[in-house]
Length: 424
Ligand code: GDP
Ligand code: MG
Image (tube, rainbow, N blue to C red; front, side, top):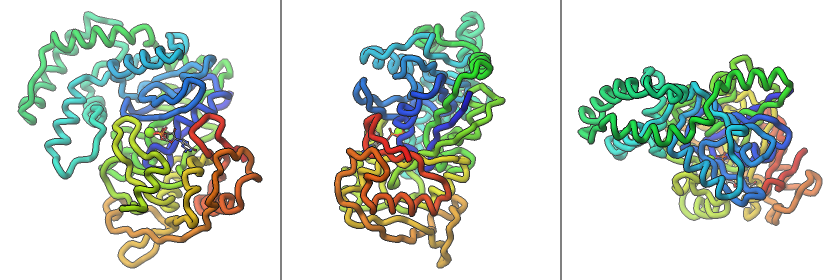
């Protein structure tokens, strides 16, 4: 029995899905413990290229059981579409290999609407939401105004509960946003249709995981987004609305007693950020376009161009601390191969003072990056599979980062394909 979390160290899109898809070879169960279908975890394997949104990235492995824990935002409509898309690709998904927590809250169509309404109300001050309803969803969950997946098993109760919630939600839709309200009939139809599709997968996943643990099964916890988007420890309010850090895995998975043997923090070899918020190392103009093109940095869910910058060792060190990472997977190193010299952010300067410490979010807008430049390797490394075959400059780049963040870089990814990996 071993347990490991794979988490993002930065702003998300570090390549977590890619690492989970690779490492699930050694695991029996993969659990998504927070976030919703706003994720885009792209994996490239024998099924081609797939962007996963809510399904755990262990779904391609025949012997792996995948769990959606109580901490996720369960949108049955989008989940069902995702399941169908994968089945079309030949991926087998059944109640045997996919289990949905009966305690997961259901993301309703009104959450997506409210997300959209609030972003347009904010106008130029918007958060850059993916408009998948995540913020209204988690707010409602904490107000105890959501329907739990397990309630779908008790249809007589669901109707009454839905009517109660709708009466309350319609007040917000019409009163705050002057938007159209819903009738219980419309939503009941939606819930019966999409809820009905996922009913066969719903079970007490806490019990399932405790049993799996007792039988000595190995467990892999998969996070969405990264430390800097964590609700409590990220760049609030430009965070997501759930806890993306490894410490939440025991709660959001349903295995509340889980002890993580390992936390693998995924770091991209440069920085990217989707949406609004302070991004100290941001590049603009030609330099940014070249990096964005080289890395194909467009959102998997939204297609939005991602903001890009050099590796930020201040933010990364903070992410490593917050995650309690025990090892690092450094991804997309191959993307930097076009550069002769590679800029790296080593400190921040805030009001004339230099610091190694990632500041309180309100101070970030005043932070300026302090840069160092390292030698590039300027050759194709995508075929390299052994540490000693990497060009010396590439090894130095990795060792430099490792020294600053104080955590061993064990995996180096040099391509999107499952096997494009160097294990040190
Ligand atoms: P996640 O949200 O953390 O799972 O990351 P995303 O899937 O959103 O973004 C990572 C992107 O980089 C995906 O399109 C991957 O296919 C791709 N990718 C992952 N690792 C590598 C790598 O080592 N090299 C290259 N070139 N692409 C990679
Ligand atoms: Mg992503």
